[in-house]
Image (cartoon, rainbow, N blue to C red):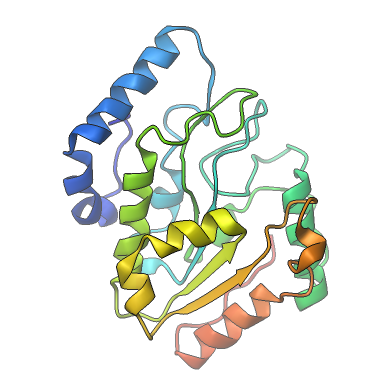
Amino acid sequence: MTAETIPESWRAALDPVLAAPEARKLGGWLTAQEAAGKTIYPPRGQRLAALALTPLDAVRCVILGQDPYHGPGQAHGLAFSVQEGVRPPPSLVNIYKELESDLGLPRAATGDLSRWAKQGVLLLNNTLTVEAGQAGSHAGRGWDAITDACVAAVAAREEPTVFILWGSHAKKKASRIPALGRSTSHLVLTSPHPSPLSAHSGFFGSRPFSQTNAFLESQGRGAIDWRV
């Protein structure tokens, strides 16, 4: 597919998808893009970081993103997250504003959300690669089937889980997962996207973090420490 190593906990869910022609075509296309001199983010070895940091059996919350940041040094495989030392982009700044309003946590200086991922927050983009400077450039190239399978695997589990859907793109992705629509054990939270273009139309004040923790604690799965 992409010469990335599939984490063991995700293999049963992903192996059938990765064996399909669409995944092989994606891998070949990415290789050809790099051979043509295109810069692709995140770099090889980081594209499945969300799965590596959050094993399937550890997922307590899923936050769905669209595609990686397309600026140099930003994307490292976690939706909405940037590498240590990189200035948080506007959407992440707004996430931090809501976090401060919701839970009273001070805004973090770092944009690296790895600490969330290690606590069971699956920070999954729909498309896991992007060409430098070209937002959305790898959409429709085959990642959807792979990331749909990831979401479906979480939704099919009996453990109560929170799905946070910010914006129409995330909601559309969730609608493709039959297991999520049928489940009565999960909590699905929806709001506008934290982008500056839409945050003031309902993202601010949506309180996703406190709602997530209240649900997880009520289900005996423990609260997430949302400090970064």
